[in-house]
Amino acid sequence: MQGLRKLQGGREVLQGVDLSVPSGCVLALLGASGCGKTTLLRVIAGFERADAGRVALDGELVDSGDAAIPAERRRIGYVPQDGSLFPHLSVRGNIGFGLTRAERRGPRIDEMLQLTGLVGLGDRAPHQLSGGQQQRTALARALAPSPRLILLDEPFNALDLSLRRSVCADVVGQLRESGSTAILVTHDPQEAFASADLVAVMTAGKVAQCADPAAVYRTPANAEVARLTGAALFLPGELSGGQVKTVLGRHELAAPPGAGASGRVQVLLRPEQLRLGASGVPVEVIESVFRGDHSLVTILVAGTRIEVPVPGNLDLDQALLLEVLGRVVAFTD
Image 1 (cartoon, rainbow, N blue to C red):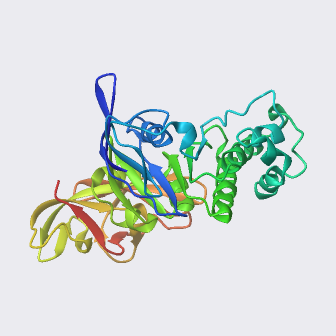
Image 2: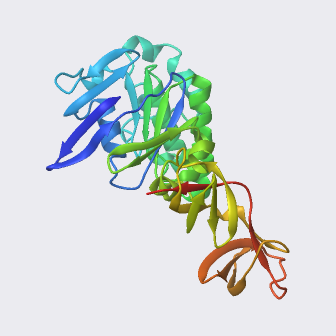
Image 3: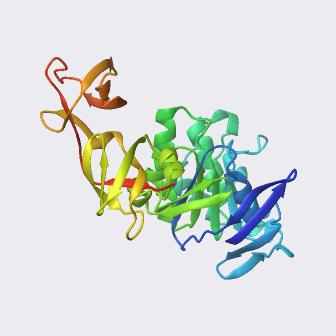
């Protein structure tokens, strides 16, 4: 995808999207509601036309902004949020819907039932399936015609959290086993990090960053990407000599803002980088809220309130110090 633009209701929903997905890769498209994720998927699938830019699959141009190949000829599998199974068809009938008559008589449906863990359920109607089984049926239907690309538009949203995690792991495992190239749309950073080879973060109709999950989390491109990818604490800092100083001391930088940069910056800290103990900067404990496996402690340091997750057995009556672990990221904007 290159320079993709899309107008809807007079608003530019896609504002020049550039994105490349390597063959066999699972890419998670992460972003808040309204950032353009679903619109981008629909343009790739051919359900909507781009107003400008290019979409190419395996080197074949399928949308140039001026001309486009119809959706049914793109060989793209699409799994929507609710699965959208045909209620009058069995599991077998749903999986075979996109196959030719000869393919439906062959082994392909049984192969998909095996791959997606649905053996023995082929004759059931969709309403006789659990939520996870329905999503696996939708995936099997998308995979059956051997598409060049699988698009999954927040397919696990309707499931409760524990089931969502397990079904997501199952589906991604099946995608990897089939060698499929896939784009998974999600607003859940944990889902994105656990499932993807690459994570692309969208903000305001553009891809702000695309990299492997660890790089996106540890060295986000900007403050908005940092907020979208996990809990984030921002402190004012002063950058000089390749280090940055905050109320918590001096810190090494994981990714300097630029050669020779200096002056006022925003410093990003992740909760796991903060530790209460016997070394660091003196702090005053304001509040502690027990949360089972940890307590969330609110502290005051140099007039700044900070929330720190701590082990449940920490003695909060002792004099405490706060230290920062590892390198930090600083933003000049």
